Image (cartoon, rainbow, N blue to C red; front, side):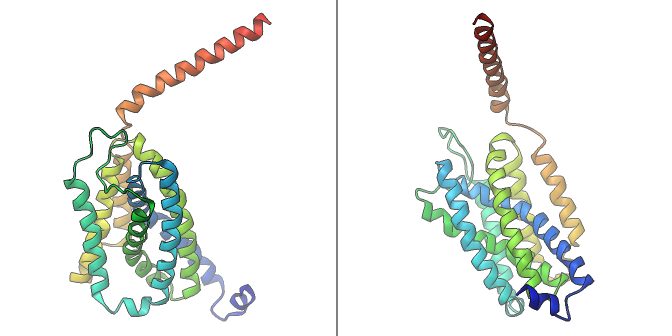
Amino acid sequence: MLDQLLDSPNFGVETLLVLPVLIALEAVLSADNAIALAALARGLHDSALQRRALNIGLVLAYILRIALILTATWVVRFWQFELAGALYLLWLVFQYFTSKPDEDDENPHHGPRFSSLWQAIPLIGITDLAFSLDSVTTAIAVSQETWLILIGATIGIITLRFMAGLFIRWLKEFQHLEDAGYITVALVGLRLLLRVINPALVPPEWLMVSAIAIIFLWGFSKRNEALEMVLPDVVNEVKDVNRLAEKEKAEL
């Protein structure tokens, strides 16, 4: 396959320049997607189940992405797909901001709760597909080469899994991060909705990326107060253990 790509008349310096752009777009556009998927995975109580949900859910998401890319020229003809994606993302945001976390839960969050792994997996796949309606159409605008977009999507899924794993941990550490993530989800949903209503109203990509970056800066601006109170105690305990160990060595 590599030989066919290298021998292709479309392969050249321009292709080598476009590929990093597609990879960068996938990475940037994966940030809000990753935090949404991480928040969904947190609906499972067990951390091992959360990781499995992300692993299996993103395999499903990858299959759906490939199907979307291969049928993209057909999908873009029907505004109903983008409308459905927009309404779904906005519904997720509405559900998040209108629901109340369980105060008795040691891992409180506003998102849906799942009693089994297989309840979370389809929702993860569908949520990624809704985001892909935005990122794939952006990728098509950059390049008409299907194989390039497929490579970008593959790297995007790998990046997404890595980032979602990090966000599961960070959501516990930073007080505003989950709110910030869902605000960016709302921006993507509104962007898709504007594309359906009037494409001329869709904000440029640089403005979207800048807005997401500013919102995430706010999301990372404050650590969880409970965590800040616990961490010094943990550090002090570790120091005490080290001191005792050194004292025992000196006595020996």
